[in-house]
Image 1: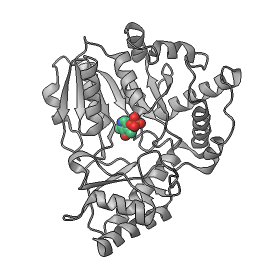
Image 2: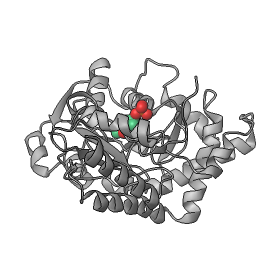
Image 3: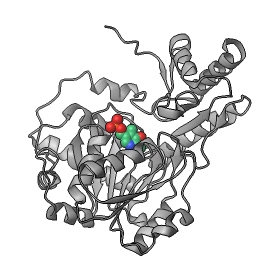
Image 4: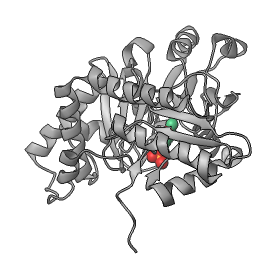
Length: 362
Ligand SMILES: *Cc1c(COP(=O)(O)O)cnc(C)c1O
């Protein structure tokens, strides 16, 4: 079975990878219980802390698994049945935190927000002073393209002394993240989004309070027990064989961002998003969120037009991938990613295709 690989990829991951990072994937994978690999891992940790604006005590866990493994591991390592958790549920990924709490018997309540709408302090008011011990949120709810206002959430958590876990999987390296200033205790990220390296890694940042929770908690899992990762991580190692090749690609990518300038990297994605949003204005697609991330533009298709059919046409007739939507939004919402190795010219190609479909194919 041969899969076409050379499509223009505007999805939310895996995304297009720069040639110099891709080339590493063709190399031999080295043995990893070595001083050199430990050094590489410690450099990854230092650069990630810098890009997260984390405090000095923060530690990074490199977990082999997709973003969801990072979500589940963080939940079971830092929370337990004595917590009372508040979950922002504005779509598919908020719901995933709900499922994790259900499965692991962690008491929770959810704030259900309508898709496409950001969070305000009045959404949080009813939960103030109600004894919540922890707060779970997806910084960017990727299913509907909503970036949640972290200042609002941070101030609620500070006031209520909530332990704050943030899934920044689709926003990190595309939008600003201020771990220390926002008082975020645990941050979850994933390699195939704006890192723009292959899928298979979840990088998790834990501040001192999170590390303390990990050390006190009992985890009914061997592979996902963060105690082991924290211990071995002190010397730049992991308890089990990690995705060695992807960690090397991560190191190359983080150094690349550091050399080019972290702000420039965010700006590149912001510019791509702004250019696309400007270009789409002439067409009758409608932007579906009032609080956008740089990483994604959610688009309602015009009435009487089927979003899933457009997704298929783009793939088959124009060699372009965008993200379709699931559930109720399947036939209404397309999601256009701006992360990965994309250019302004690529935007022009996509906009021309979206225009052509509406004018000539529907
Ligand atoms: C992509 C994503 C995930 C993780 O998905 P995986 O398929 O497990 O990598 C989790 N949360 C958000 C907000 C995401 O965008």
